[in-house]
Length: 297
Image (tube, rainbow, N blue to C red; front, side, top):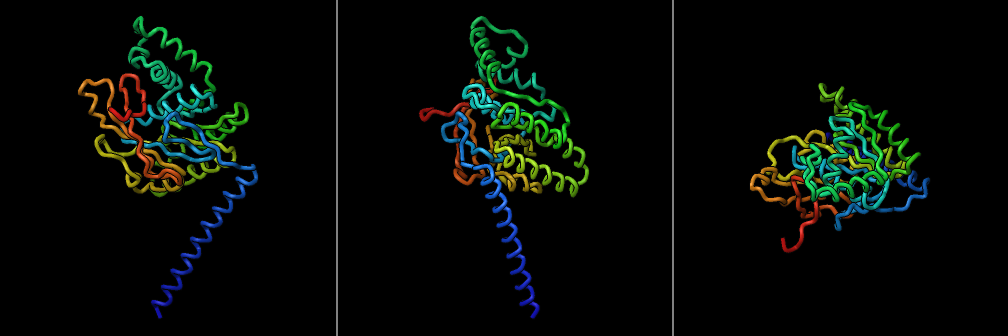
């Protein structure tokens, strides 16, 4: 009798979860139908990678591996080269000046140390001027507010979409959003806040039909370990809420051999169309430029 009751309870639990999933799917279908939704894609500049409009994407890596650099390479390809409006939201330690200096290096191919110090060589001048002109003309919009809240971010996204027809948002240092920082001392509160913040980003993608890229750091200091979904550990709600999860990886000690470029990779850990896909890349530490690896390299 007890076993029958357990089976019945399990059956109701399965039905409850199924109804919840169907309800969520119906909401998504209804929202997309209301805005005459058709699937469109954003070209990223990497031949085997494209983003769907309206997706929430997580880009992550181990510390000091290059997640911000890769995100800025995407910005270069999408906004600077293809002229698609992109908004950058910076709630953490980076500033707009930091981002622009790194973009100048990526776009010009000039060593970022020389760009930052202003000590350009004669052969750098033309490349630097061309890059500066391209970035100046690019539809790039910044919201640089340290320790900003999710409510402030919502206002910024709405402004960018309504005034500049922004198609993609890149949010740096996701974990430094004020709501998350303020609840960090209590694991239970933090988990609830994290889920609420992620739900807000999901709502933004639907309401404004924009792609949002969240740049999120993974814990762990060993740069040789390839990241995976399990690294999100007790905060697995992050990949669960995301439509696509990307991991950028390289051996951060490789640069000690003095070579100008080093191998890197981008792994699509979650996606409905290209899950499990691996992109082989090359990374230039001086310029922070990522490019696709050629077959003969």
